[in-house]
Amino acid sequence: METQEAVILIGHGAAASDTPRPLVEELKKLEMRRRAQKILQMSPREAELDKQVRQWPRTHKTDPYKYGLEKILETLQKKLSDKHVVLAFNEFCAPSVEEIIAQLVNQGFKQITLISTMFTRGGIHAEVEIPEIVVLARKQHPNIRFEYIWPFDLSLVADFLTQHIQKIRVS
Image (cartoon, rainbow, N blue to C red):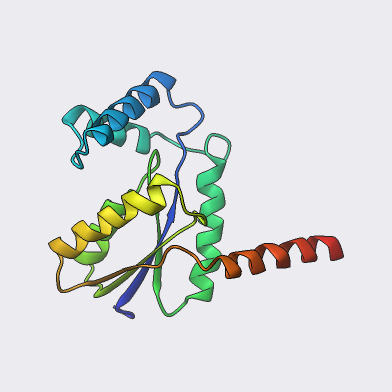
């Protein structure tokens, strides 16, 4: 292995546009019920639906979000060429954050950095779910360093947005 550090780029995820709506609706209903009861573990039915929705076949047309995030991943891989950079999704799309963590642990990575594409506070994924996943991963793998680099420095986010606005205006 060339590097000991892996980076997980985490996107929200979207159901493919041709995923049957009843599947997604039932999945969200079960998730909401579980979260309201403060239960972390999915029921067998929720896990079955989650897998089915995540593994639904995708194309550029049925899931442009996934393919857009893969383009960001490609650019990030070039900029962080000394690290192993991979993609995971919070929901609706495979692979999950948990699946990627398991793969990286099995591949022998000793440092795993997680970064979300969600810039602002207030969202359940970036603010609650990912930290819960990291806490569990640290308990399961105490010899591996997990670092979740969030929330973002809003000054840097504003700089990024400003630069983009200025670049577009110059074009």
